[in-house]
Image (cartoon, rainbow, N blue to C red; front, side):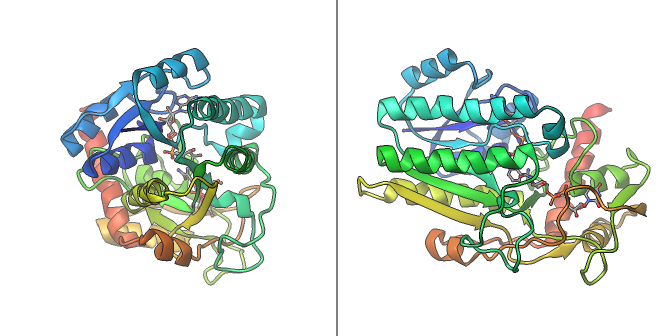
Length: 340
Ligand code: NAD
Ligand code: WQD
């Protein structure tokens, strides 16, 4: 029994692979290293004390994917592999549609022809856009995202729902809010490839002196301190939700289609300024910042209602914002130690 984890050397994927190995699953990773590095594989082994199988190739290469399915008895897939930079997706729309959707379809073709079920998809709160009401639950109406990246997530969801219905398969669509943090071992985390777009990696690099100042995109939002509010979920908590979602799919004996959809967040919103302050307090460091104009396409506020995940998966986030931000700083120190 092996679980295919695509993008398993990526940020969320690597943490999830550790949790899967800790829970006794065999793991087969396919990752083309387009947004990761080989040392992450070694670190996964060190942290988990077990070795996943690893194939370094692009999922768009269907013939190679078929060989993986021929070599292993795959019982499920967690599909993390995707390109995820919102800004870049606007400049390279065709590449984003190709990478995010062709990869998905290639895996589904294998699932379809081999009668495999149990598919977990990395979706995003971006599918809700700026919701009219907070907190956001799974029945909150979806809005077609503005970004190409977001559209690939919404389209991915639609493709999977059609797949589950047509072939009576079991799928889980996990809508992450804002994942942050690193593994407590400080051996896994979000790799600083290029200039970070996301808040916490930018804060981390500013505190480390790699970036001069954090730009806070707007302090004129209708929120308590004027900065935008998000739901920051600790990556190890998020990884554990994948194991819970997978077990739920695997335990379902019925031959009917099963379509699970969960919001994965903490249920609590934090403003940009709150995150900066929490990082400073947690790590006793300073994060210089300047207030700038709003970033195009940003929403004001998003935080999750997580009751459904708690009830059906028996899962909830356990780690505070400050604790999560402490692991970010330990990860930065680890990265520094690698470069000296
Ligand atoms: P990541 O970039 O760290 O991980 C993705 C991994 O997939 C990388 O290691 C990359 O090398 C690999 N990959 C990409 N395209 C591939 C391909 N065609 N073939 C093989 N490997 C490929 O990203 P992440 O932050 O870990 O995100 C994982 C998933 O979660 C993505 O689908 C992303 O869209 C989704 N998501 C992320 C966030 C977030 O803020 N990080 C929020 C919501 C949803
Ligand atoms: C958080 C807040 C920024 C950087 C994006 C994607 C979304 C999802 C998660 C995958 C916002 C502010 C940020 C900076 C800042 N990804 N900020 N200065 O925008 O909620 O969502 O990542 O699915 O699809 O759109 O996350 O971390 O970029 O920003 O002030 O240098 O921090 O304006 O309010 P976001 P983020």
